[in-house]
Image (cartoon, rainbow, N blue to C red; front, top):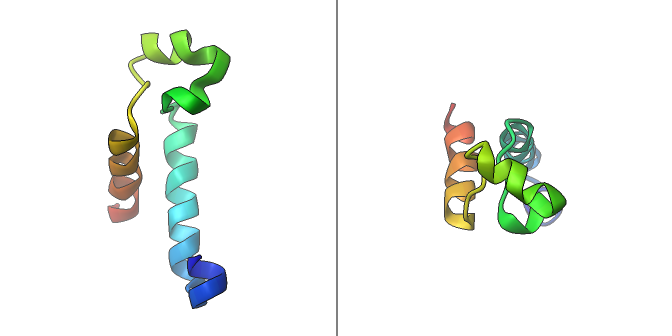
Length: 62
């Protein structure tokens, strides 16, 4: 949306980078944890959507 509808390339890239960073750290919501749900949960990295969104926002603010 930001990239294609509003020509906000930097902002779109910032969000994509933040999402990738959060995923690279191992954070997952239940729907994307899939078969690794127990493993992710045991690592303390299984979160709800509200927490996942906050993790992304925190990365953007860095």
